Each structure stands twice: as C-alpha cells, then as structure tokens.
Length: 315
Ligand SMILES: [Mg+2]
Image (cartoon, rainbow, N blue to C red; front, side, top):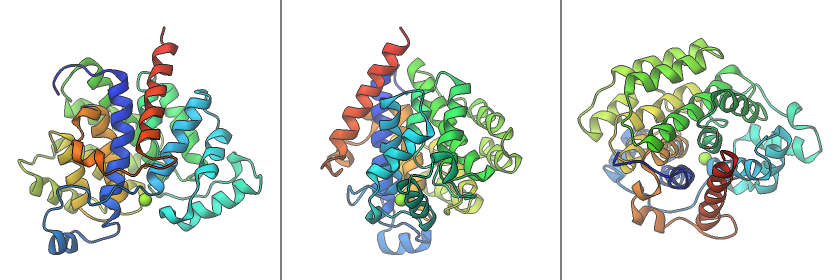
C-alpha cells in the first residue's frame, strides 16, 4: 500500500477486479490445479476478457444500489433477471430462480437452500458501498444472498466476502497496511453469528505464511476445497489476498489453485481491487476486458457514479 486511495479508485478497482479475476479464471473453471500446471505452467495473466455469471450478477447489484441504496431484494432480483444471459455459465439452480422471478414470484420467495458460493461471488459492491457501516453491510449482504442462497453457509459466504472487501476498502481509504490478525478476527466475528461452521474455516488464515506464489497456491490447495461451495471457496479467495502483496499475485494465486477458479479469481480480485485500487491492476489485464453494452467501460462508469453517490450521501 502506498498512500491513501480515493473512493473512486476503490470502487472501480473492486468492480473491475471482480471482472478481470472472473475472466482470468473462467478459462480453467473446474480444473484440477495439476492439470493447469501441466497445460500452462504457472498462469500469469488472463488469456481473455470475457466475464461469466459472477460479474454479470455483480453488475446487477451495482445497478440496484445506484437505483436505490436502500437496496430492496426485488430491485436486485429484477436486475439479475434483466441482465441474465444463460450463456454466461450459470448453475442450474440459479436458472430455476430466474424462471421464478420471471413468472412474477416475489424476490423473498424464489431462493433455494443452496450453500454454494454464488451469493459471495457477486457481493463486492455491497462490501465497498457500505464499507463504513457494519450493520447495513451485514443486512444488505444477507438480503442479497437470500434471493438465491438461503442456507446459512451460502449466506455466510456473502457476509464474509462483503466484510473482506469492506475492510480492504477501509484500510485503503486510510492508507493503512492490513493487520492480518485483526482483519481475520473481524471477519470471523461478523460471520460467527450466522454460522460457526463457516467462521471456524476462517480462523486458520491468521497462521498462513508463504514467501512465494507457489507456496501460497499450495496453502490454498491443502486447506480448502476451492469448489462451488461457499465454505470451500470464500476462505480460499481471502487467503489469496492475504498471502500476496499486489493485485496480480492475489488473482494468480486464486486461479492457479484451480477448482471454481472464475469465482475464486473474481472474489480475490474484488478484495485486492478494493485494497490496491484500479491503478493496482496491470494495464494489460484491463485492456483485454470485453466491451459491449455492459462491458468494461459501463462497469467503470457505474462504479464512478456509485462513488460520487456515496460521497454525496456522506455530506
Ligand atoms: Mg462463473
């Protein structure tokens, strides 16, 4: 960390960080880390800039906050449906939820009992927008999760990831280094009210130490399943952030650990993007991100608008 960041750098960094981490990992989604190593060695940068469901649903949350920062479940659900593109790699249960929203069933009644990582992968905007208000952060994270994921582990994943983004944003605003023990303790404490099972997976993060990228990847592989479960993926993404010293390494660690790599890449990118800001993301990574109706420029501009709205609300 070098100096304080502006809200704008943080909001754009976390949004485009999600996007680029998602696109980076999507190429090897579901792969065993050994297979990644055999085929690519260490993957050091994204090979393409096409996002998946993780980023598409994050855009929906950004739009819902912009529409009304009181953030109703129905506004979020409507944006999810409006943006829904079945070719972006959605899971079957989410497609079922989309069908229900389309049929007019209200947003509080469409969710499943999923413990998957789908509520966490998209939650970054709630993390950065409500970084300075813990009760709103938790309230909105839970509500946004329950549209699709009602299981306590699925909800915990969203709250843990939003808190990880929020703490990174709070440190970046002040220009402070991350105190790993304090950072992990705060996430553990926040999540323990929802699921002890989840929070107990986070405590060991305080003891992880690695001097290089390969060692950090091994730590993720040996401690977490890195799969579609929230409890297997979210702590892995947070670890990738804590075991690195810059944006690129955080995402490289998450993606090369394999498994649900687009989602762990997206979540590590969201946290690291909040902490290092948009200028911390390598230029050549940003240049390949897809454009189009809701591409990189759209996401960038919406993040800037949210930062301006947040500044206005604090006056
Ligand atoms: Mg995905």
